[in-house]
Image (tube, rainbow, N blue to C red):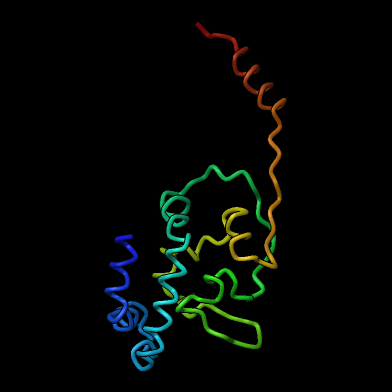
Length: 154
């Protein structure tokens, strides 16, 4: 709760911070619109992606037993269900990230989308899907058995 409250305190400063980080004057020139979008963005981020970022992205959780297939179709769903402050329309029903080429983006949750089926389900992604990875227990057991049967050189 403290994180949500603290974020809302800094929202009026966000256009300046966004301008300084990303060098886009539109954040300052469209101050009222940026603040409005930032409120929506902060609320959407607080609904789940923050936990995902710290658990799966920041801490690099590698215990994710799936493979992801597909390519981005620029629907904007993964951008907080089209609520991301950085999302920019490029055509009818097509969107792009306004900070895609920024070096700061690599520290974001966006740089890892999608990691697992929860990501795809959360945003109802139309273009990515999960391929379950089957673990072959027999092969694992055989490998362990072979490792145990190696001759002792001493």
